[in-house]
Length: 75
Image (cartoon, rainbow, N blue to C red; front, side, top):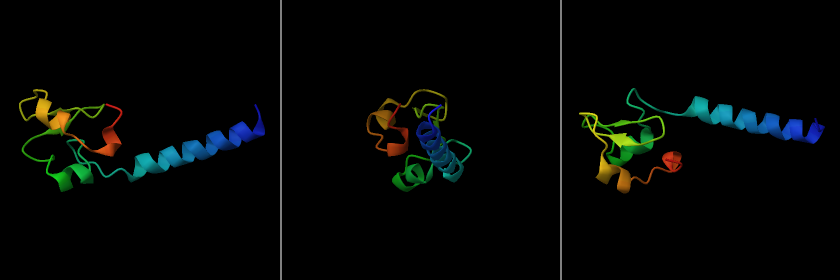
């Protein structure tokens, strides 16, 4: 493999590892932005891909529609 590609891949991997380690998520998969905006709490949780669910497990349509957390934009 090209040494330049290996270097770029190693740097990218290191940056991604730092981002994953530095994530400040609680047991409901909510991060500090969710807590600051008031999305966290009231029994809400986030799924693996960032969808917000109500306390009873239903998909929270309105919370997902107006969700502005940039860490979950790929949802």
